Length: 102
Image 1 (spheres, one colour):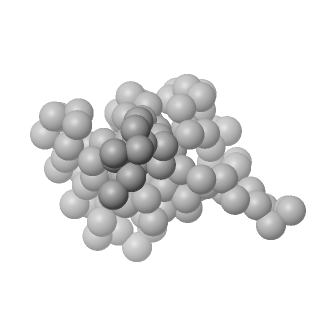
Image 2: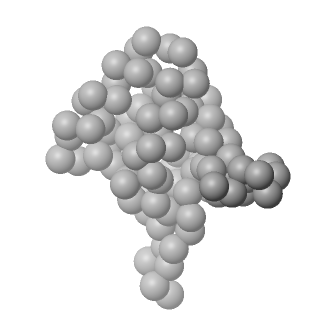
């Protein structure tokens, strides 16, 4: 899981758009707000892009001790990825039909 703070989301929204707010669930302790982006959503979104560079960047992301920093760099380099991650998150959170609730 990748934790992205409110401040980081505000900065990356400039290049990636409002989809950054929909990449995962929002959490707050009343002082600090953040979203949690699931590794599986990032992996599925990267595969969906069919871009070998994005897929290749996943290895670097997985191996980094500073995943949030690498994730933000990835979004800056591939801004449309935020939209794809948000769509993947929505698809897995809000199934289209009751038959998909398995």
